[in-house]
Length: 120
Image (cartoon, rainbow, N blue to C red; front, top):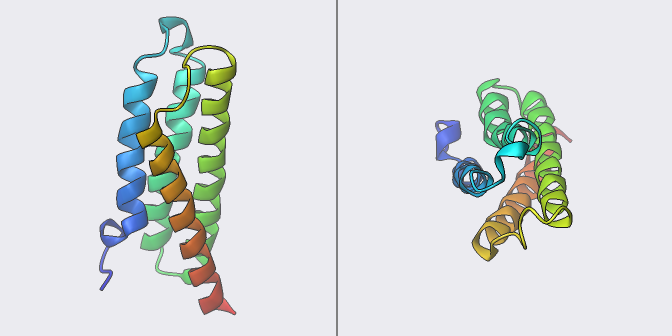
């Protein structure tokens, strides 16, 4: 039974993914510290924050809205990571991070559908 947002598997995956993104971005050149690094980190941390806030609102409609924001933030992270590759900052997204991102996206979409079906 889910008593807290912390019990949600999607939130747990989001937290682990956030830590992995922070670790990866720590390897970026110092010249990117105030641009791409910050944007990537802000977008990534937005995912678990929005899951937590939406769940804590106590309304399925609000939860759905915040899950949509979390999904948008995840897309922003994916775009930032793509850009870092195009700029040659990283050679590629580490496979473990890529797998986490994919799992997070699947879990978020599944939860969005579940919450939406409860509203219909």
